[in-house]
Image 1: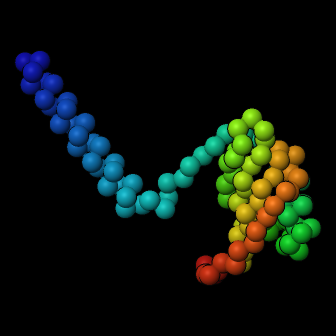
Image 2: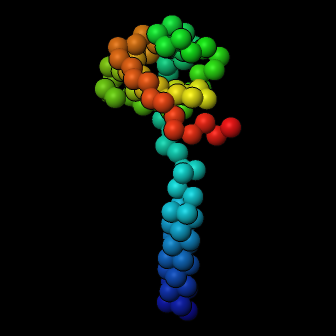
Image 3: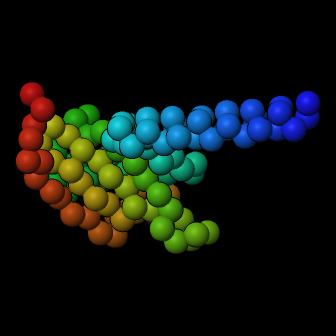
Amino acid sequence: MAYIIGIASSASWSIGKSVLKKIKNKNDVHFTKAQIGTIDVNTLKEHVSKYTGINEHDLNLISFEEIERGKGKYKVWLRNQYKIISVISNRQGSISNFKVYEKSQTHI
């Protein structure tokens, strides 16, 4: 009896993994990577606005990740309707480097 239960549970696990993999592959754009940390986003938006001329209220945080562990250096992605901005910043929102990319589609 235990042997039959073991086979059934293994089969269920295999089927479950394959279903989740198919869902992930089909909808891969909806899966995101999250990171926990602190960064002064308001100050960062103010600085990005000053350098790019984009209104800070139009800037949306897409993601951020710590690029130097323990040193508080982050890569931050912001966007507005027309541009995507990649920023290297510290926790306080001071910018050391940034790049602005034009969006190819505005999704209007």
